[in-house]
Every structure is written in structure tokens, then in C-alpha cells.
Length: 128
Image (cartoon, rainbow, N blue to C red; front, side, top):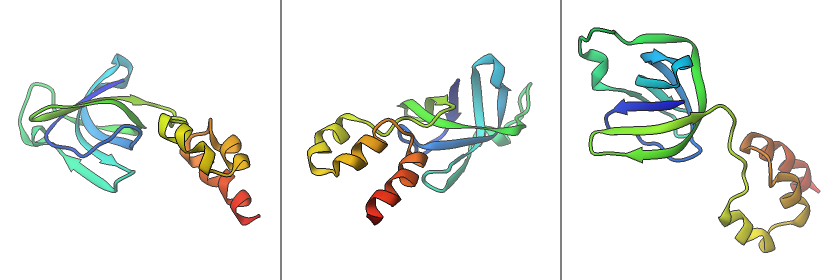
């Protein structure tokens, strides 16, 4: 789903995001967000569009739209990104480069997991 919002919102690829209010229908594949939360950074953002009268007023999303940002594009006065339902896997070029410094068992257990599972899988190995 393509998400667009007006304003300077701090977001990076893989950040966990909740869309609280906006225009559009999640089924259409495109949302104009007016209030959203970057769960990863602990930031809630309210766009200036929220206060402007328009033909279609922003509405609350029930349930809230939840996902992970990818393909982030930052413009002068807006941000656009794709929202993916599943967390991205932890494996990345940087992680592959660091493999030789990491515990082999920890790397194998965590390489294809989303970050929630990585923490759960890492603790028993680190305890040993």
C-alpha cells in the first residue's frame, strides 16, 4: 500500500508505522495519512492537512493500519513510502559483512527472521 503524507515526518526503511487517520481506503492500495505514529522512533505526527477543510474529511482507521515502511521517498514538503504488513528480514548487506564477527549459531538462527523474532531467538544463545 502506498502511503503519502504532507509534512516532514521522520521515517526510515523498516520503521514500524501505525496510520491512525487519513483519507482513502486501505483496499484501494493508496492512503493519504494525516495522523500516524512511527512506533520504532516513538513519534506521533499530525499533518497540516488534518486541519484543512476538503471534500473528503480525514477519518479514523478502525482497526488502525499497521506495517513496516519500505521505499521511503522524502520530498521538500511531503513523505511517501510503501507500507508492508510483515517485518523485513534482518539479513542485509551490512549483516552479511559482519557475519565473520558474529556467533555462527546466532547468525544462522536469526538471519531470515523479522526483528521481533531475532530478539527472542538471540537471548537463549547469548545466555549460554
